[in-house]
Image: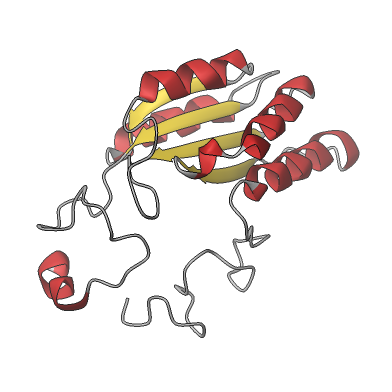
Length: 178
């Protein structure tokens, strides 16, 4: 954590392909799901393998139209090997998101695109495990997990507060770790 936001660090910010479990760096908001849908399509129809593709989507990012275009593509091609995880933490980069913690609206939108959709407490590991299990046995439809979270969970003065996007904790780090 001492190297957070340093270019030479694995924690430079957005995940990069330098990490062996990251296939692409997505750059602009909204591109990741399109790439993930393409990877899932390739796995299902070209490579004919049984791997799953997982894509994290921030709630601020979900305001991008390309997210919903990719969801339409994934549903049309019945990409049951695609799992989207929406991190609904209410806070964008510089202000609150338009839907806040309204997980039901996210669920309605995802279901309208034909996704198996689950709302979970994103801080509850057992709920996440159940949702990931359901995604692993999905058939004919992609899955979306809507994870309600709070940025900075458990850190006094940071939890659910604006203006902490991508910032190091500074003098608050020791208290957060303890």
